[in-house]
Image (cartoon, rainbow, N blue to C red; front, side, top):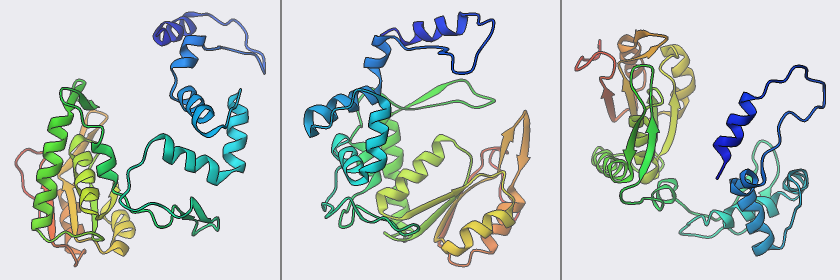
Length: 255
């Protein structure tokens, strides 16, 4: 596969002048054949008889035959469900569109069907750490342990769980554990102030919240312990607060 070579070649070319409508770059045939979109188009033609020569033709079909397009994606990705859907799109009303009525499925279950021994599931880095990876075994183990703990604290399907943490592996683990239970997940970045977060999550009446003590940005560390304490005091339905001392070590909330 020559994707990297093609991109490096494109980046190295010097373009003296650019005119409107000029073709700046065109992928190689190898590049095209290796893309996920091309693989989907090949599958669509072979299995559902929908053959498109160009992306524009595929796009037009996807926007005019909503049920055909989204139904094909369900089949292409082999979505697993304990109950099948009765129709792809029962109502197009917005807001209120009714997608895949009757289907019963679990997001975490569909994620972990890709679990592979010896393979990496996550790659992550930050301003202060190098690129790291987390294996499927580690991810799956941590999700299952956390989901078991959450159930023991009374979290049930339909309960609301919110997160006030940055985009880190722990947040991914929390989200997957929540969806494994069948609870409802919502999240806010810790650069939101407490009032902004409460405006978003108080209407959910969450039973559990994941919080961190702070976050780093632009070489600076921002303390969020006071904001977290204020939020927890103003969410009366909480059964549990799971606190991650990320920025200030083993510190406690300023409650």
